[in-house]
Amino acid sequence: MFVDSHCHLDRIDLTPYEGDFSRMMATNREAGVERMLCVSIDLESYPAMRKLVEPYENVLVSAGVHPCDADRRTPTVAELVALADDPRNVAIGETGLDYFRAEGDLDWQRERFRIHIRAARETGKPLIIHTREAREDTLCLLEEENAAEIGGVMHCFTETWEMAKAAIAMGFYISFSGIVTFKNAKMLREVVRRVPLDRLLIETDSPYLAPVPHRGKPNESRHVAQVAETIARLRGLSTAEVARLSSTNFDRLFLQG
Image (cartoon, rainbow, N blue to C red; front, top):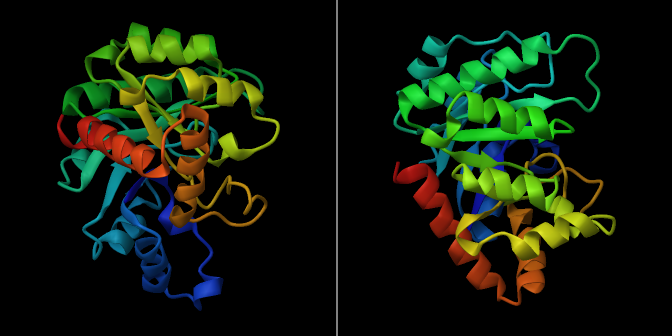
């Protein structure tokens, strides 16, 4: 049985299911996905997302505002703390830094990141970190804000082993998405081979980043199996073993804090 540690269920195109969310969820269950973490990217859409997943006890949620869009309202620490009081809420994020297409003064990104770290420390709930082309600043802000006190996960990891090692030293887990199945992901597959098995998570980031052989199509949580299969080959394990250990790691990080 699989756990999809990072997905955006409220953003999946339901056209193949004639608009029926329950049918899409049934396909995930039939594929062996027992739990999902539906991750917030802004506070404006959070209430609708939370309502959508309410009937599904196997779906957990997080609260946060994505770093990419300057137009999204930055939350206060108090707002994030209040949302985290929800029993189904297990994390703060996603948050972090993304310099890939960003231009100009990015102090707003860094301040938004700090707010999330402070909220995580106040609630005792782990962080879900998005980082892209911002390795040094991401690690620096985590250290400055004492994020090691609560830890979390580097989601959809695409960076170097050196960054992974530094994050692990601060109490973070490393989560791999369908990108590990891409032909050009040689560096990332080397990271997969080196991450301690007790710090490894799997995810889809659906509806984005569908793994091979679904690349280029909308992603769904059921495709987390392809991520597990690739990691299993790289680590000399069975897919069932990767499913088991990543599920155990998920529980340790998000449910035993």
